[in-house]
Each structure stands twice: as structure tokens, then as C-alpha cells.
Image 1 (cartoon, rainbow, N blue to C red):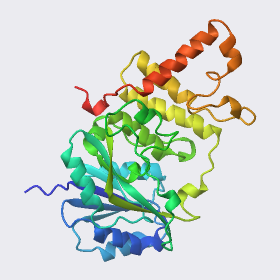
Image 2 (image 1 turned 90 degrees about the vertical axis):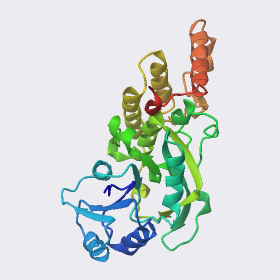
Image 3 (image 1 turned 180 degrees about the vertical axis):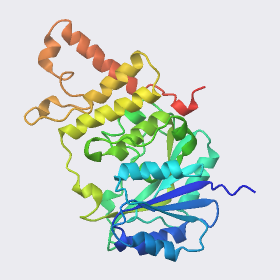
Image 4 (image 1 turned 180 degrees about the horizontal axis):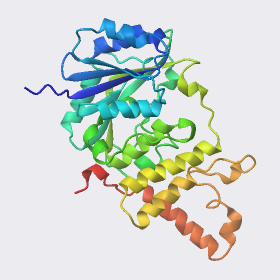
Length: 322
């Protein structure tokens, strides 16, 4: 008898005592079979895990994991992914909610298309008190994704916030393991999850599943609210994205063009020079003075054209290559 689950759901805890009832509600909303639920606490700063363990005693879907090594959230999620026994992975934050039927809709999308890497839900944003925040209900599927997967699907992912919500989607684990494509930390861990989506978009295609809902909770003490993005985080992001490109993109001139594209679209905006920053590329490609210089101007213009042409080129994802 094969009791291996189809899906592993990871719920990492950190000072989660206030969210125990919410975690238990998420667990109750999960399918009764084919799912393992890993609830993990690596700080043990309160009794949240103990309470959840008692409440789910006898539920064969739930495994409670504990350690007091104090690892950060990137290491914690990577550890859970490595512990997963399912074919698919889904992350659920302790303060968010996944309604009944949400996971099933994502599973159906993944099983209907074996070449799909990520199926991700609609996001419904609210406060902890349940007040809807419609301005934050932003999913942003790429406009061309229904037709074909292009270089722009990953090149513009960070700058234009495409595929918002995909980090909490359903992810096929075999290609992730094959390429050792776990989350790589940025400076201060800021935007590490968005950078991982960049890497995943190099690995395989995403699909938006509007029938699936993920309830995202916003409040002042949440992790992202404390982030203050600075130039060093943008430069760190370049390093992380270049690492994903080296892992997943074939060598050659196109890879070098991809790396240049990443640099030009990740440079920090400098106060007083914002007029030089015209999408999709900043100075020096938009500097009129340089463009007037013979040879230099023509080369810059041609480089800009090549970078724009690259965005619309079809891209064969790493997991789909022979």
C-alpha cells in the first residue's frame, strides 16, 4: 500500500500563539486525504506548536516538527520543502487563511498539465479584523502567459510584480529537487521570495487559477511591513538572480544579455537623476548626450533594441528541455 501524499502543505510558526485558532481552521479546510501538513517551529518562543499538536492528535495528515536552532524564515521554509514527501508543495503562513476548495482547484490545474510548474490562486486581502482591502487584491498574471512563455515572463517579474501570490501557490517538487532550486537569501532576506519566483519562472511555467482563493492578512507587525528596501538590497537581488540564471539558463550570448537586462532593471534610482530613468531601461541607454556620440550612440541604440527584442522571444523552460 502506497501512503505517500500527493501534496505537502508547510505551515512555519514563529511567535504564533495569537494565530493557533487560524492555523487549526486552515488544517480543517484541507482535503481529508492525499495531503500531509507540516507544522514547524524552530524558535519555540511560545506554546503555539504544543497547542496545535494537542488539537490535531489523531489526525494522520499532520506532523508537528520542532527545534530550537532559531534559523531564519528562508532556512525554515527550505527545510520544510526538503522534508516534504508529496509531489507538490504549498506554503501557508500562520496568519493567512486558505478556504475549503482552494487547494483542490490548484491540484486539478497541476494534474491537467504535467508541464506546469506552479499553479497559483487569487489573493483576497484583509485586516486581522476581517476588513477587506481591495486595493491589495493584486494578482497580476503576465499578459502573454496564456499564449506562450517568453523571456519577459521572468525578466519583468520583479519590476512589474507579475505573478503576485505565486509564492503561496502549488509547486511541482521534482524539478525543484532536480535543479536544487531552493530559496536563495538576499541581503537581509528582503524580497527573497520574489527572487525565488524569478528562479522558478526560469525553471517552468506558471498558471493563474482564479477559482482558488488565498486570504492574505495585513497588519503592522507582519514581517514584510518591517522591510526597508535600500540600494544594497537591489544589488543583492542582482547577485541572487544571476545565480539562478547560471543554474538554469544555457550558456552563450543570450545568457549574457539576460544578465545585462537584470542589471539595468535593478539599478537603484538616484535622487536628481530620475529623468534619466525611462522604462524599461535607465541610463545610459536613455542618455541623449551619449546617443549623439558617433559609434557609441549607435551601439547603445542597438543594445537597447536587442534587450527589447529579447523580452518577446519564446523561452524554453529548464524543466521542459530534453
